[in-house]
Image (cartoon, rainbow, N blue to C red; front, side, top):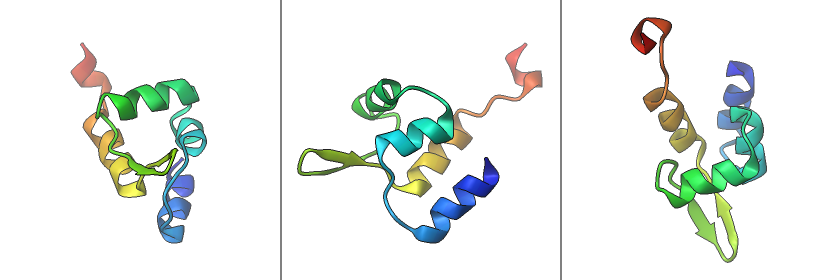
Length: 71
């Protein structure tokens, strides 16, 4: 997964919800819910929503749980 995130940062383009769902291994509707709830910042371009790779990285870091923290 690190390689895919590194590739995305290299391209410096905004991500579609489908791409984010693939990276996080969740449904596209879940991605839209996370954007709607403000958990993942997004950019609206006409009717399309896009996510900046740095915002996705921040979301991943903020939600990372280590096994020692779960107990």
